[in-house]
Image (cartoon, rainbow, N blue to C red; front, side):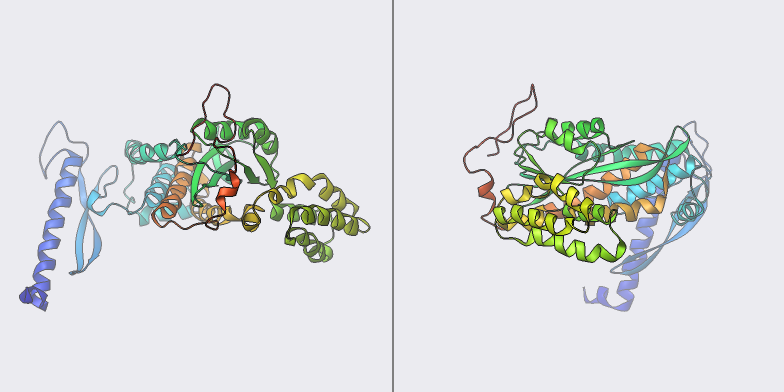
Length: 401
């Protein structure tokens, strides 16, 4: 053992590891190609075309490996497979964009950096995508009946994709929830061509059909069709209009100079300590601002029920359920990844990458659980009724154990 810890011993270990890994890589390449070096077989699919250098850092030191290059398609050994689903998804999307000829100059550079400078076939892209799609689809369609989710957050972000040979904006809608134990989960994601009532209805119905129950409050922006869909599908749930998005909406009807004063005045609504005080303060603020900004007064009064819905819930939850801010980190991470691709070749590619991002974040929440709401405060959400919100027609509610 002491010998192995010496410089010569480490060099011996490094040399053995390097040789062993190289042989395994060559064996995998042979299996992929269907033939040994200079072997003629009916099963051969392509030919070797040299190697590209790859340095692998280990505790024994850097191992200098050679990754076989192919004349057609690309090869990367399973032993050195790219780490996370999100990396695999980004790789697959970039390859797919490259194959379909919709990549930009920056994507071309990424393709080369990923080692596909010799080209990649459509069949190879299909293989990569197929490997990912199984686990991503399973995540997107998994059952949600293991626990009740009193709070559900909904938001949309927008990305560019090709549809019928045109580049168009696609809505990516994401749902997350706070469970009755105080933990968080990603509930669902969908890509569509608009934010109509029909689109939101389909998304919410999909969540309910997977077993989503116990919903008491849905927090979201005032997207077109969203409120109607919530009241149609999420029976028994209230709707909280995001206060942050509402403030941004008011900026469109006032001068830039007045923005901070109006925002500070409206924020006093959410600083009250009782439900009655919240609703009374909204009326007071509407009257105060109405003298100078009649449109803001009209907006406040029209949105009163939706802006103050949070006040019917435990006060200890108020700061977390007044806005969709809990989704901001998710949206930032989604945009950071999708901005790399810029234009997606199709909806499937966009959905694949976004799902991978959400899967990783969901795994973090499950692997490193942290109560998002205070312990002992969730019981107030289900004081008497053991059952969740009413189920959809022809379905049965699942009661959490």
